[in-house]
Amino acid sequence: MKNFALIGAAGYIAPRHMKAIKDTGNNLIAALDISDSVGIIDSYFPNARFFTEFERFDRHIDKIYRKNPKSSADLISICSPNYLHDAHVRFAFRSGADAICEKPMVLNPWNLDALQEIEASTGRRVFNILQLRLHPSLIQVKKEIDASNNENKYEVDLTYITSRGKWYLSSWKGDESKSGGIATNIGVHFFDMLSWLFGDLQRNEVHLYTQQKSSGYLEYKKARVRWFLSIDESDLPQSCQEKDQRTHRSISIDNKEIEFSGGFTDLHTESYKQILDGEGFGCDDARVAIQTVHDIRNTKINVNPSTLHPFAAKKL
Image 1 (cartoon, rainbow, N blue to C red):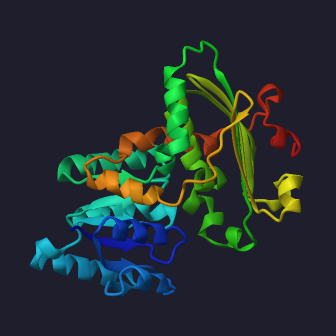
Image 2 (image 1 turned 135 degrees about the vertical axis):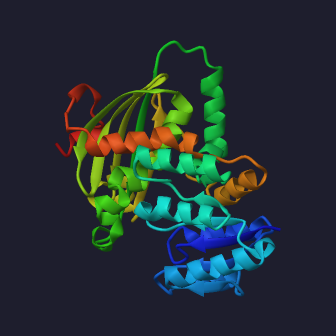
């Protein structure tokens, strides 16, 4: 049984990590969040120590590590705001623990470089949650793509609209310096999936970029991809609005819709199983998507009608 600590216990994604720790037969010894709305811990690890101040959490973890290393945290799960991820990974390493980090692992490619240098000097590892690579439907799609003799590039449309209220832009998620912006915060795992499915990235165009929506074109070795991401409910298709659905997720390959709306429930647990079995996704796996979203943030808008996503065309 492994001991875990968790940073960011009050966040949206933290319960999935708690469940994964529980489901894999391990123990949560301590958790941290500046918010104390963490009653969910009772459903998984009611005996875990909880802290609202990093300094006290740090002192607690350090005390255990120095006095009784066998009882200290073997792994630290990181569910904190995006801009804090690399600092919290370094904290895990200093505490003699490996790290399991939510996406995006970091905001910039050079942050990955620094973590890899520390990995090399400490022997510790950081693993990224890239759960779409473990989705059964997408694994099947990858098998079909890898086995195909298709000489033409696939034509792909990616559309993800996940409505968010006014709170979103007032939180850290609305601050690009902290979240990385819309393409990073809600899109980085899709960009990881695309490079995993279709190979090397060859071209990156940005057609639309605001706080609430972003769109562009990515060309990979095996695919041409038009993408559109939004947190604005007015972008939802009429069919979703009529059903009061606040999320629309669609990926089509050569006009064939890929159904993967289900099957997400246990992907964090599956990620933990692989990590604990000595596998999992590290810095090298995360790099292409991190570079992609970094470039999206820093690329000059250049509208290309021939590669424009249909949803973006309505906004320009």
